[in-house]
Image 1 (cartoon, protein in one colour):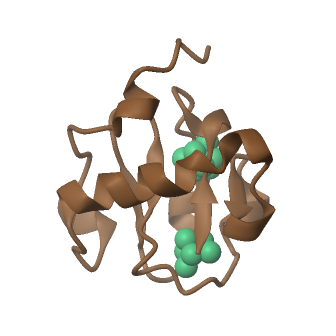
Image 2 (cartoon, rainbow, N blue to C red):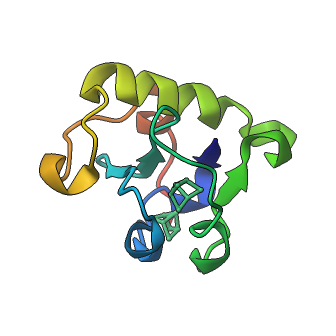
Image 3 (cartoon, protein in one colour):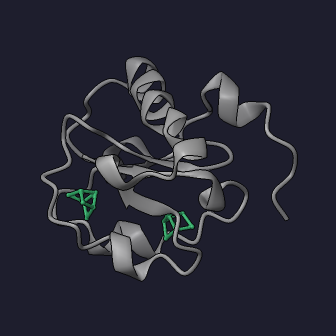
Amino acid sequence: TYVIAQPCVDVKDKACVDECPVDCIYEGVRSLYINPNECVDCGACEPVCPVEAIFYEDDLPEEWTWYKDAATDFFAQVGDAGGAAAVGPYDHDPEGVAALPPNK
Ligand code: F3S
Ligand code: F3S
């Protein structure tokens, strides 16, 4: 799966959302999250993020590997909805993301 990491926090550009063919990029409070169960690894989102927040899971910088678990946490709450448009912004962030200092 692909993973959204720290640069998205408080930025939420959402260019990635328009690229995803399966609508698996969901909005939390401070960041967006890719559903690892729904992502088909097409990679279309990765180059369009203006702050380079998106990584293939194996390519995450060491300090950001925990964002993979953060996404798992997020979708434990949200579930596998089969499309972000139907869910809309969701009032939740994983603890690690919620606790980050402001990113702007
Ligand atoms: Fe975030 Fe980049 Fe998408 S800032 S919302 S991962 S385009
Ligand atoms: Fe969508 Fe990016 Fe996965 S465009 S299918 S979240 S690699």
